[in-house]
Image 1 (cartoon, rainbow, N blue to C red):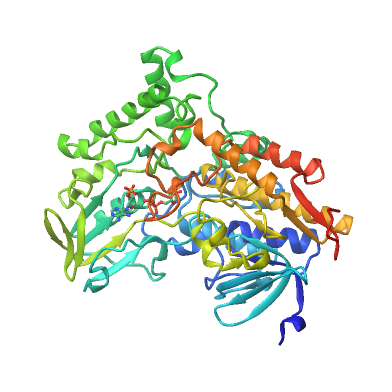
Image 2 (cartoon, helix red, strand yellow):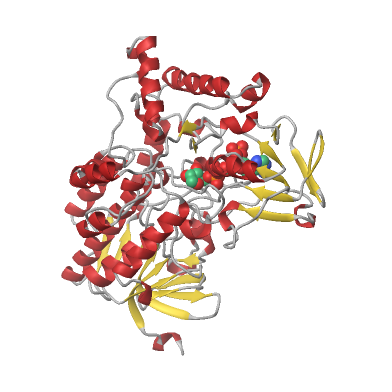
Length: 545
Ligand code: NA7
């Protein structure tokens, strides 16, 4: 079929995780647009399809890590979570349930990897090619590819000559892995490693953990959901969702309105203890200047270091686990359930690779400057090329053949983190420079999807065919993003939030730090002003509509 004969869809969505599923529902069922979703995996779920490693669990509480009353109040009533922080299989079951309930599968093409997407300026549409050579044409292209979907596998010399089995946590075998009796190396102690290590230690003969940067892990406080808790949440759901939309991080609780040093030491400790006992990210919301002021931050940092010292028997190992070179929450703090006690076990060894770097993977193990650790299996819990990794793999080219990769080489440039100049009719769900990974993802996903839906409705009602941010609006957003970033301590750490985990990646804070509520207000204002900062044009028109 020639390109001119390709049937034209209204919209093409890439990805069938939380965002792609909701986007499909809105485009197809709310707006009545012809829509297809292309998904590389063999089934839906995104993050929750791929990350099946032992201990995989969400770090946001299940009752607000889900679709809100905006999708369906009935769904909220009928779905009951079994744990306060849901494990991967349960979240995947939830997404499968949503797909069945809203009949979404019929418009998703599984096992379909997008390899190129180019804007045809004459025809005013996107031409999309897949790895199998299939082609699609669509007026609007919407990326719903998640923020953590391209794995980072470090290029250690000899990596591919290892004779045992190797795994990346983000590409875990669906049949599971039996580590019984094995010597296992785990490289990485981010949120993923911290969940996996205690589970593997229960099973394996020996686990050697290779830690580059210790983290400020926070008590997870997971527990089963009781019928009473479930009822209370369901009765309160309207308020809960309303709160998530206003707060800084998209949680139903906000940052307390007080500074850390404004309260006496013993009161501050009590506040930290109370948040610790509640578990989860509440500790990060105890004071409003933890992310802004170094001295304030140090109070929380030291509280967490002392928690590690209390729980780890060997003082030397406790000090290896206690972070000292970056402020609290400037790297994503993992949530842990028994992680530190794991280091009191006889079958667990901690290796500090900052002091003694990994030199090579050998056929039989991991070699550091201190010698070789022989193992049967290696688990890479080494994270992701976040935020831009997957967007770049889509091979997106905009007007005049400009590729997204080339445009963003010297730094990400977006308007609102949702669109970018020279790429008309392209929307990114939770793209870089939107709150995304600095928030509870489903809340940010819903906000973007709903905003795009309203925008497309507006375009249709006004007979407008093209939308694209102006270069000036983009300039303004990047400047605002940088200004907000500079008020925080976030650029201080070598985190994946700033791209520091990927050699050669441009260093910038990828998510927007202004907060979910503030950001929503800005987006709503842009829409209320007739999509200020965007050029809207009718078919064939060159002047703004
Ligand atoms: P993270 O948080 O990026 O953690 C990856 C870990 O792997 C981290 O400890 C890294 O150390 C370590 N790492 C990465 N590359 C290397 C090399 N080359 N040598 C040694 N150690 C290395 O990924 P996760 O999968 O744990 O979590 C990602 C997000 O998923 C998480 O934040 C949640 O939002 C959900 P480093 O800290 O870079 O020194």
